[in-house]
Length: 239
Image (cartoon, rainbow, N blue to C red; front, side):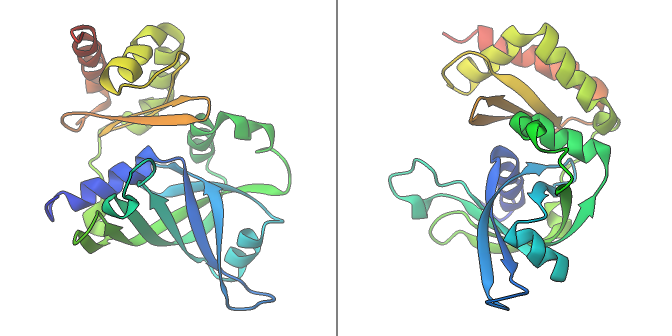
């Protein structure tokens, strides 16, 4: 992994994982202590993590007093030697959001959360990132500023995303299954697309998530159809 690869590695980790460890500072007893908790995460097109949290949770009480947080995304699962694998800690400031698009992106990533997302004591939150600390394995360690993390943008893709996902899941479930089985080596039926951004697509099957990256970033939403069709052809050509 070169220095130039590191921002892309961070983006890939954030998008590939659907949960993270959230660290906050407790405002009450024991005041001032760091508090780590497990949260479900979706990631927006600009790389901002999106959370759904209960007002009664200790971490929610903490961020109301101090919005500075960090999230650890651990990509070492399944490795015989976890310390050789990648993990990234991102730092940012969190604020509650009423943005319906962010809510929809989170619920597409975590469909079961729809059961409680509408409860009055739950709210959606967006984290504005400031820095990231990547440990890509032994000796592959670097702080990365948010400007360097900025993902590529594809004109019109944010607005077109929901329609693309609905169309693929409704009319091309077989293609999604091919992506998972042939291109990613994932077992089982019933994979769904949950997101698309300039660098790849997100898939889910029950409690499993998967990330399929594109060979090159999309420049505009209109390119999505061509690349999705090309990936089907590639998958069908594989033994």
